Each structure stands twice: as C-alpha cells, then as structure tokens.
Image (cartoon, rainbow, N blue to C red; front, top):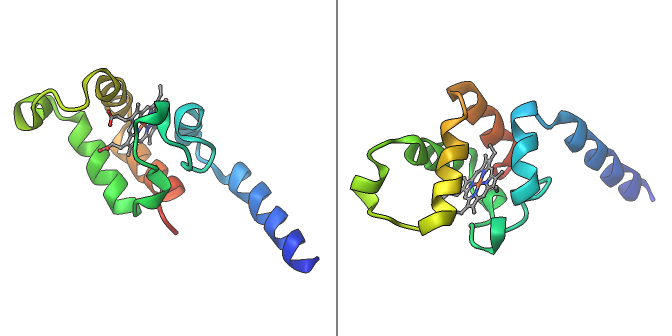
Length: 101
Ligand code: HEC
C-alpha cells in the first residue's frame, strides 16, 4: 500500500514537473517518452539525457542531409522541424525530463 501511494505520488510529480517545452513532444512520444512516435521513432526514454541532446542537435543542423543523406524520409523531416524550434536551454530541459534517470 505504501509502495502504491509512493508510485502514485511519483506519477503526479512527473506530470507537474514536466517543463513547458516537453508538453508538445508528448502527443507523439507519450507523456514519459515511452511511445514510438508515429510507430517509427525509437523510444526516447531509453536514451540518456546526453544521447537525446546529441540527437536533437544533429537534427537541428542544416548540413544534416549532406551528412546523412535523406535518412528517414518524411518522418525525419517532421522531427527536424520540431528540433529546430528548440533553444539550447529547452534541449537541456526536454533531455533531462525524457532521458533515462
Ligand atoms: C508530430 C510528432 C512529433 C512531435 C510533436 C515530436 N516528435 Fe520527436 N520524433 C517524431 C518522429 C516521427 C520521429 C522519428 C523520425 C525518424 O526516425 O524518421 C522522432 C524522433 C525523435 C528523436 C530520435 C531522433 C533520432 O536520432 O532517432 C528524438 C530524440 C525526439 N524525436 C525528441 C522529441 C522531442 C524532445 C520533442 C519535443 C520537443 C519531439 N520529439 C516532438 C515525431 C515527433
């Protein structure tokens, strides 16, 4: 019983603690980053915060296509646009929120 209360406590805590920048991600990646976005993405809560930061920074770069080619097609374009809208401070927030604890 105590464990259950503690778990529910954590659940409420996580929802309240989600930074504003992470809210827009939840529609595709799930509240805790536990879903595969559009059934194509990796499960982002299995990455460490640093891995999430690195992937977002790579997606932001205009030289992305030159370096990787047209990798991932349309779904990757969607995520590149999302990444470009994030500031460095927001990248840190979302990485800490969704990343492996
Ligand atoms: C409209 C849906 C959508 C939203 C909103 C969205 N994503 Fe994604 N995301 C995707 C899809 C689709 C992919 C997979 C792209 C691919 O691999 O082709 C993806 C991939 C990723 C990846 C993995 C990239 C890689 O290198 O494989 C990360 C990290 C990520 N998203 C983080 C976020 C964060 C953080 C937010 C909020 C700022 C966010 N996403 C918002 C759809 C979304």
